[in-house]
Image (cartoon, rainbow, N blue to C red; front, side, top):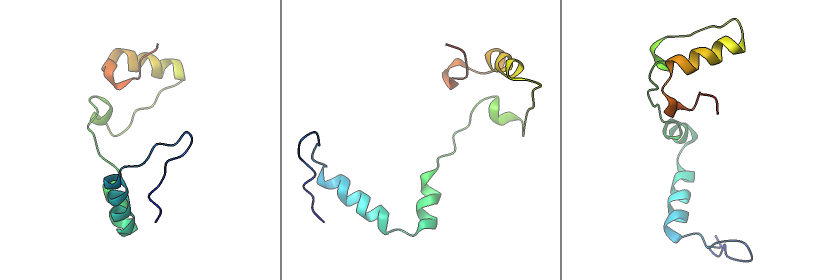
Length: 76
């Protein structure tokens, strides 16, 4: 594989990054998918199996009243 990724507008990819990528690419798909997704607990959102709302306005209001702002569901 040609490691020279440099050129106009392109940064050279560090050798370590390429080695890690190539090692990951050799893993079976099932193993790559298992490591691809990280489950992160989201307060309030993960505390109920589902929620339903009559309309988007009701959903947005619920988000503003119940979810921490760092989750990013509030209005800007």
